Amino acid sequence: MNNCFFCGLTHEHKCALIKAYEYYPDGKVKRIEFMTLNDLRPAEQTKFVCNTVNGSLQ
Image (tube, rainbow, N blue to C red; front, side, top):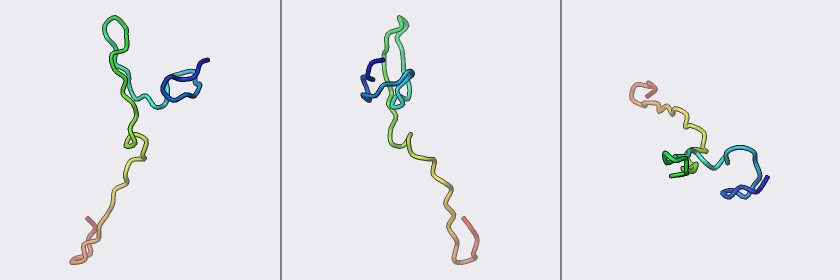
């Protein structure tokens, strides 16, 4: 195996930095979409705020 063109590591399958490929009808790569920091961050958890007037959670 050769080193990955994008990350420099060796791996058998798609590079983990690549989110999606788009191809032309002839099979050539048209576009490569890379992962962003937002893709790598865990989903934000719902945050509750206590209403100090009536004590309810919003």
